[in-house]
Image (cartoon, rainbow, N blue to C red; front, side, top):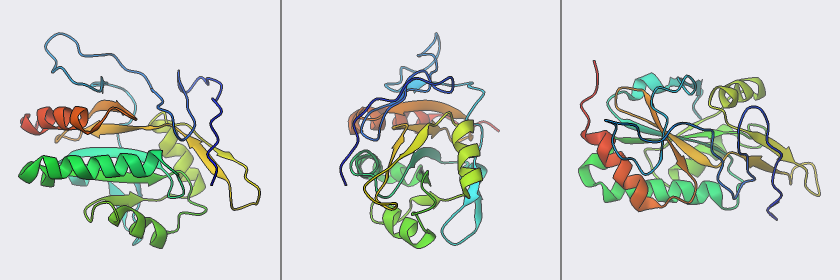
Length: 210
């Protein structure tokens, strides 16, 4: 599948948008006084990305609350994505291994923005190809739009030569929640495994609130 590399016009939802192979930044302040020196964008205290509830491939409704005690990395993408999505998941799987025993406290969550093609069976096989512990989530088109809006994630279907050969432009970056379930970081695509590992170590060392 040929990757469309056209830039998308800025919308009110996001200050910067990108096609599948470019990073997009939903905003957020950098590290402030007293905060850890993260490599990613520190969005601690943001009023968006506060929660998520969608079905996993088995049909079970899942929420981020069930992963409390773990650092959760949420990424919106689609299984036909040619480079950004697989690269992001490969990187996260590598970081989990790099963290050793602490890697078991890192939870990857993949949310499809293409529920039309991403069937439950395809999603399950896709994420488990990168890490057996990764969780895939899929909603109805309406649920997908609502979840993306809540996370300030942009996505847009780009027609292909046939009705099923389309691609999807989407925000390329991950959201990181701490072990207390609070949103903390937005990681740009292309930041690298070392930067991600650095930030996850900081979050894993924090004592969960409550």
